[in-house]
Each structure stands twice: as C-alpha cells, then as structure tokens.
Amino acid sequence: MKQYLDIYKQELLDGVIPFWMEKSKDKIHGGYFTCLDQRGEVYDTDKFVWLQARQVWMFSVLYDKVEKNPDWLEMAGLGLDFLKKNGRDKDGNFYFSLDQKGKPLVQPYNIFSDCFAAMAFAAYYKIDPREEDADLALKTFDNILRRRDNPKGKYNKTYPGTRNLKSFALPMILSNLTLEMEHLLGDQRVDEMASRVIGEVMGVFYQKDSGLILENVTEDGSFSDSFEGRLSSPGHAIEAMWFMLDLSLRFGDEDLRDKAIACGLRTLEFGWDETYGGIYYFLDCKGHPPEKLEWNQKLWWVHLETLVFLAKAYGMTGNIQCLNWFEKVHDYTWHHFKDPDFPEWFGYLDRYGKVQLSLKGGKWKGCFHVPRGLFQVWQTLEKL
Image (cartoon, rainbow, N blue to C red; front, side, top):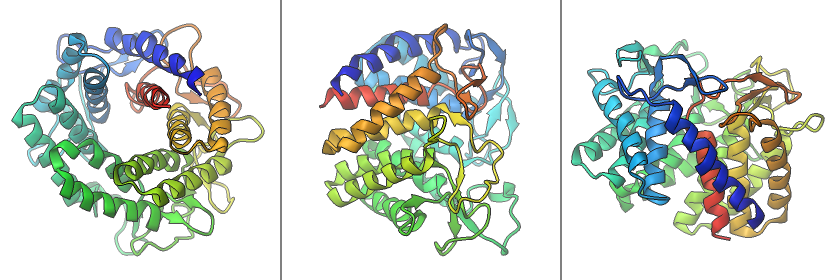
C-alpha cells in the first residue's frame, strides 16, 4: 500500500488545502465561506457553525502535525475568533447557522455544532494554548453530555412516549471527540468516557444477528421494526469503526480491534453496489424500501471514511481483505469524486456515478471529510 502514500499526501497539500486557503477566507467579517461552486467561487454567504468548527480543527491539526506554517495558524485563528464572537446563544449552545456577519439564522437544535466546536477549540489549544479556549472546549463538552439524552431539547419534533428512539450519531461522534480532547480531559475521564461509548457503539447499536450497526434503537437498546429502526447508514457505521480502531489502539484492546474490522467489512459488503460500484448512502437492514429518498446516492464522505477505515485496519493487522477492498474503493473514489478540471472534490453522485451537484462546498460539505480522509490515509500509510 506504500505506493498510495504520495498520492494522498500530494493531493492534500498541493490541491485541497490550497483550494480552501485561497477560496474560503472571509477577510471582512471573519470565518469561512463554505458555499463554493466548482471553481471555488462563493455562491452563498451563510455560515454553518459545524463547518466553521471543522475547518478550524483541520488547519489546527495540519499546523500541529505536518508543519508549523504560519498561514495555517492564521487560517485556524480566523474561524476560531469568529466562533468565539458569534457562535453561541446565551446558554452556551452553538447555533446551527449564522449570516455572513455572524448574526444567528438557525437555532442551536443540532448538537453536532457543539461537538465540532469543542473539537475545534481543543485542537487550537494545542497550537496556541490559551486557557480561555481550553475552558470553552471543556464547558462545551460538559454541555454536550448534559444534553446527550435529549440532544435537540425543545427543538425535538418527536412526540414523546410513543416510539422513543436513541440515535447512533452522538455515541459515534463522542468516540472520536473523547480522544481528540484527551489532552484536556485527562486519562481518567477518557477511560470512563471511552468505556461508555464503546459499550454503546459495539454493544447497543451493533446487531449480532446481522453484523450491522443501526442508526436508531429503542431507549432500552432493542430493535424497532420501523423505518427509523431498520435504517442503516453504511458510511456512518464504517466511520465509527475507524474510531473504534483508534480506541483499540489507545487501550491495547485486540478484541475490540478485531470486532471493529469484522463489522466494517460486513458493512462494506452490505453497502456496496455490485452493479454500478460505490457505497449506498442508506439501506433498510431488512431489505425493505428505505425511507430516505436519497438512499442510493453515492456521497464523498462515505467513501473517504471507508478508505480511512481500510487503511487503518490493514495497517494494524495486514488483513488481505482490507487491502483488496482499499484498492477497490480507492479506484472508485478517485475516479468519480476527484474533479479532473479544478481543485477539491465533488460530493454528490447518483447511483450510476454521475455528478449531481458540481459544488465543492455548501451547507453540508466543507473543509473536512476530503482533507481529513487524505490526511488520515497518508499518515497511516507512512507508519507501514
């Protein structure tokens, strides 16, 4: 797999990161533009808090782990200062979106704004340690934990008491966020948190009979035979498995490592489109018609997270299945998502592999999954 190392490194450092450096800065009001068309021109100026935070995190990590590039430090600080000034309501919850100047547009209904804000402030603290940023990261993390049983709070649309479900998304994110914040949380708290999230991911949402991860289960952890309860998101599950691999390495847990690899490979087999290639966005675990109308789209982040999982799994075990799958997913991903004409990658394909939206960024796609995926694969292969 070493032959892939320079491909991922070069694409990250010579293509994707320069694109965001050049195109996304808001030099007037701070923060970043993420709604960028194929050429990188701004087509909308709204700012989505979780994408602002993800970009702060990405440039902080690059500065910390790749090179002490002052331009990267400045870029990370641009988003951090914008979030500190504008990102939170009076209760400390991070809004979902803001206008260009930083005025709130959408209420803080989405706890993932808070998750990525905590990750951003924790990462920036590593490269420019200021106690106010560490304090904000820890307060935000504590706020996430307080909201974990009802993340949307008063913005929850579900009628209480009839079909109370809990979502896989937050335990999944916490399994990564906990390690990202270890330098602030400390070993003991990480040990406690990691034990809980591993138990939820691999003991509650993982279904032994199918070998798959479900997106929703009942409050007591049992299966709900409903649209929501049957929902599988292969990309989410596989991304979570590389988080599990990182945790297995942190704790020296080979059983967790092997279970995560088995689950990731099973999910990939389940989610792969044998006819047209690529990984489905959503599936029904029983094979019924999925609720999601976009179920058969092929998305950038799903494939990049899968490549990270496969690289890590192969690097840790030498599992030949992981190598074979890596080559297969790599070929599909680089052929379909990489734009041959302009920097950065496409995000949205139909089932047949045709580009549906030529944008490079928007409400959901920013400076995160492409650069993080390239970075993670490069760093993993460098250790082989």
